[in-house]
Length: 571
Image (cartoon, rainbow, N blue to C red; front, top):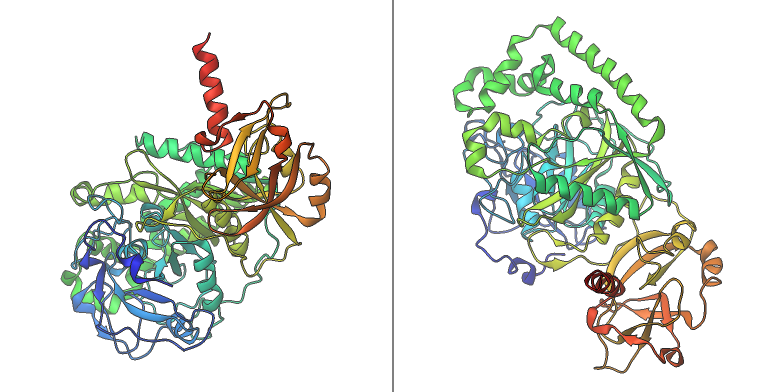
């Protein structure tokens, strides 16, 4: 749960425009339940009984007489509602700048956009003001703000969470989404929120995949990538793909043309009529109360005939058939959450074109009935966050969460804008798996090192990059092939934190792995920097004769790099 210390970690004042309604007292949930003690915020197009719902349009505002179905379930699960957050008006936009209540700044750099339309929800999570927040996602509004604010954005399969009590944007493809700083928290919320609801015409019961992706998986990426000239984003995506390969993934270049064509249809065809239909009783009377460019987008939906809409739906089905063929050789798709990042000033100067750029890899997902999860990938050299999105078939929610958690915790990032380290990965619900053992490796078994295959061929997956407790020293052992280090536990005050990777290995294969460990190395119990214990490589002290103490370098990778540099210098 959010602690007071969390709220004090931001280096700058918090942006008040992230909130539209924040009463002095939170609305308390049940005293017990799976979410007991957690606090959350609600995007202000989702009803909370007794509170106003504005959809960021003051003229539209009304007092909600009942909770939205999802809010009711989360309160019953023990979470407490803190307030309601700002958004692009009527959830129409991906920038976070289309609101009469003010543009919501980026949580990391306030000169940049937060992303939208769920801008306020992403901001209050990233700044540690709540444990999680609800957004909505029609064209990417639950993913783009996550990617731009260094947090997790979970867009579930359509109909998994009821949308009753949510002001629709395009009701047939709307989803309630979840923001959190960790995948585990988002999944915990999803588990509590899932329910079939007869009051929602698009609610449905889905059979979710329960088998995690294997140690080897194939992921599709666009054969032609577009970053709109943003070289830092391009480099960050390349680094993310390299990380996925180190986790056992194989990238497969795919022709994304059918997906891009679907994305264009959301606003460039008669499908935009859904935007008008969603609020036509209000809009046709109060059109001038709606801000631009939202007004023009919604008004454009009136220009199409019923025949146009049928033709657009048929065209979408055709593209869906073509898109289906892309899945024949891959387990999931991986894309940049957003291909670039814009300042608020630039976005407001060119609100349509730059907003469209942010949705390059998001607009097609709900139209084609996919699940998606945006996770932080890195902080770029300019200090801006970069995220990637895992996209899976309908019902793949748990699989995406499992991979997303492993990827996120291997990144070494902190939580949102708080500076707090990621907690240890947690077991996720919904997945059936064989017993595993966690093994810490320190040298030749690290990702990309000569013996890493001994892990991956046994189905081991990278769980985290972390450090030992400050109770170890690291040595480069002589006469070992390939070169190996020796990790030795020492007395308190004589050691240092050493970089390690923690791998999750099926217990059935652990014995064969241990059998490969040569003397003077052995497997024992290591203490990590967070105080937890795992199995890991240790070295017999008698083997240190002639070894070089490399503790000061902090890890084996740094030592290997220093040797390579010295070799080049001596040439």
